[in-house]
Amino acid sequence: MLTKLMKYDFKALNRYLILIHAFLLAAAAAVRIFLTEPLRPGDSQSIIVSTFGMILFVLIAVGISFATGLLTAIRFYKNLFSDEGYLTHTLPVTRGQHLLSKTIAGSTWYFLDQILLLGSLFLIFHAKPLRNLFNANKAELLKELGFTGAYANLALWKIILYLLIFLLISALSSVIMIYASVVLGQLFTNHRVLGAVICYIGLTTIMSIVSYALLFALGLISLKVHDTSMSMQYFNTVSYMVKTLNLSMILAAVTSVILYVITYQLLQTKLNLN
Amino acid sequence: MKPILECSGLSKQYTAGYYALKNLNLVLERGQIIGLLGPNGSGKTTFIKLINDLITPTSGQILIDGKLPGVDTKAIVSYLPERTHLDQTMKIKDLIKYFADFYEDFRMERAFTMLRDLNIDQNARLKNLSKGTKEKVQLILVMSRDAKLYILDEPIGGVDPAARDYILHTILNNYNEEATILLSTHLIHDIENILDQVVFIRQGELVLNASVDEIRMQQGKSVDSLFREVFKC
Image (tube, rainbow over all chains, first blue to last red; front, side, top):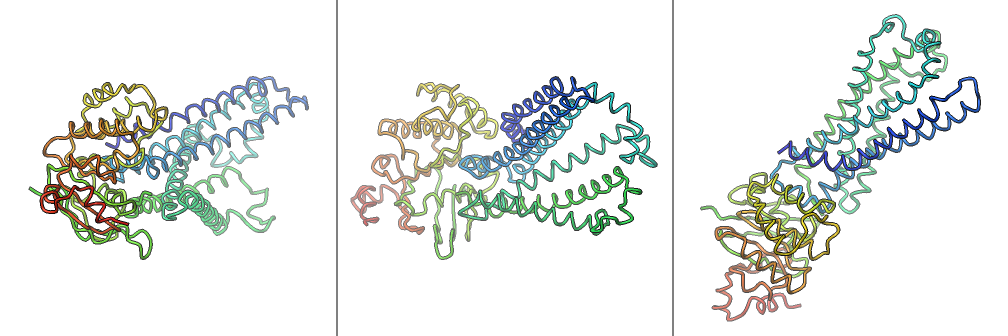
């Protein structure tokens, strides 16, 4: 039954998400062909035009990521809690299977969205003029970024694998948080959608405060601008990023497990369709 | 053999002090067509939603074929809600595949035959159909299952009298004799002739549970006139 549920959950999401991500790749290809490939690094006009193009692309990418989250939330809400819920909940399937199927479909798309976003950025920046610029300054750039010491000569596959794991956990946690908000919103009997939005804002705010507090507690951020441990002389971007990403991965994994259990319990005990 | 449905002390409270259903005790036997009758807001839909596990009871319990509402009961209950519960962006033939995918007792051929009888294009998307046609499609899907219990909430509420006849005809022709149909409506006159049993509920409480023959023989009244008498405003 889980496979059948997933088939329909993917089908419902694919319908719009394939289209908008095709648009993302097309936009990236257009930026590459018309802006970054003909870029002349010394020409200020060329740089200005490319910068505006990049800003536009970033806006499109942010919009598409937002739309991915929104469409996932709409599918979850519509299929389980609107009139369609009258069919969904009368299928001979457990609530746990419904939740699992939607979590797999939603987070797969969230993951794909981020991969495609990174892919399209790679497409844009892999243009010849930028490649030449990078190669000419490679040693200096890598040193500045902190690819030194333990991080020197880091294999590319290790970086990619680490990024994939990070993106997977982040996709799962984002989707679980959306679903938890929708289910918590159902407790606001008369304003269920508004309740879901309020819960989402509440949950993301709590997450931000907790992660900020942890970063602070672990000394990864400091109130002092010239804290010795943070001074530029010793500051290593890669090392800092790895520590921050590790922390946010652990935090996301823990909160995801908690929210998934809460969502499951609420679906089991508090389902009250209008 | 266990009754197809039994509920004991079943209550549902939506807000403090307001009970949509209050201490309902009821047993429904197999092989009958039962009318669940009551005025608007009497708790008919709440009862039906509880049977279908769409809401959680405040107290009491329901047993369907001896089991609490869950995966096993959903496999034997075919439910027609009073609203469009299908994904309206889907084509009719895909909806049929959807039902066939999830319900083992779904008979595809029966659904396609009924669609052909009614000249409904299986390639049409549900959202492009008229309200009446949508209701017919829903009914076709629900009646194409070989379920043990059919629950039809206001199946004839929104359609014209001609379509009403077709729907009743469809219901009668497609259920097997051992199955039970629980049919909620306030259009009693139209369905009176097909009912074996009636259950009257008012303000969430059971008022009457009797066979149609009993009502006719003992009280000398039709169900329609008894309903008007009991629920007189």
